[in-house]
Image 1 (spheres, rainbow, N blue to C red):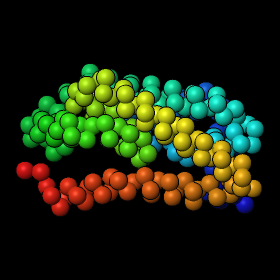
Image 2 (image 1 turned 30 degrees about the vertical axis):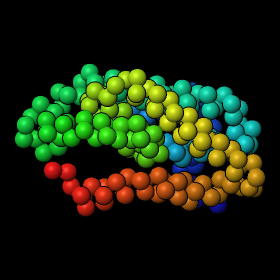
Image 3 (image 1 turned 135 degrees about the vertical axis):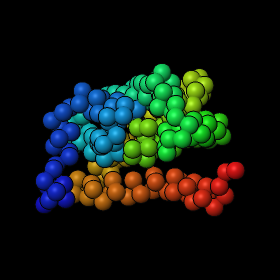
Length: 205
């Protein structure tokens, strides 16, 4: 029995049911729209790639749609942040959404901007909010879109192709879907964990 069936949810069957359009919409929402932060990202792409190996999807079409959706979703998040984000930071003494934290966000993107846009692609939840914060911080759009496109290709094509490759060489790979996706998520979180530990050890003045 598949692990996903034990949990009462068969992700590959869900993806098979929603098809190309459903995958496009989920990737778009999860890439930069606040309501999409809970949607599957890495697991969706990996499973879709696995289904492509089984002949359910065309790999080239799938990757093309995923990359386009990821770029558009990040761009939408950026413009949401740039247009409405600063209104969230109006209060001087707010616990999180303060002008002081806005200044810190701007400093973060000044120092780590390009790297953050790419790394965030591989981190659940962070992937959704990073482009919004980039817009809030008024990161130069020419810089943002460049690394947005790079990150979309690396993440969208990379994770999808990984699922396709493993699905092509390992029989019944979907039985090991959740452990593999879990490992991918853990590995993708490591850079953020290291950055947080580094910041706590050497706090900014």
